[in-house]
Image (cartoon, rainbow, N blue to C red; front, side, top):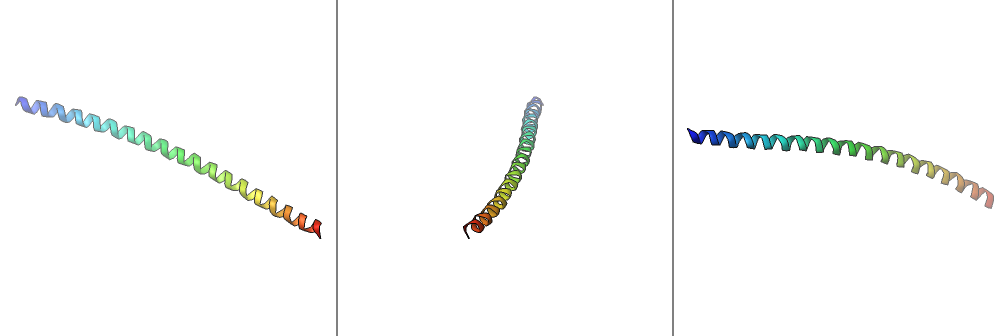
Length: 69
């Protein structure tokens, strides 16, 4: 019967370690999800800036071509 107590203690330790690892994995996944969201927002902002620059370039090109005529 004494062996069962040791097995139970070992199982409790293993379960506790697995629970801690699971909690850490959830925290890491949450942080990664937030970081991805921030990166996506930054990418969207950069895309808007690039589109604005394209429009400015198109206008400038038209003006330059008109001035050279």
